[in-house]
Image 1: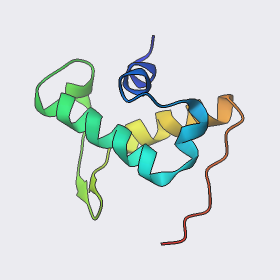
Image 2: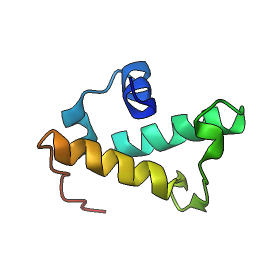
Image 3: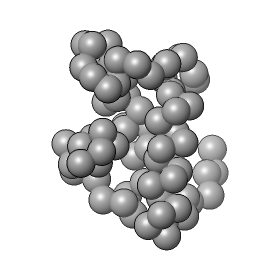
Length: 79
């Protein structure tokens, strides 16, 4: 199980749930908490703070790869 799959399981999210920005942000925030606590492998990620909270470019790439490999497209964001 990959770290991303672990987070999805803990957060009770399915691949198609990642279509929504709010669910992807939940994944980032959960990973940030694990990073803050020093849990491997999340302690290695960089989490700059953005408008909607902590965000890891590396985790974002992993999420997008995961979605693409499962044929999931993100929803249009309407602000």
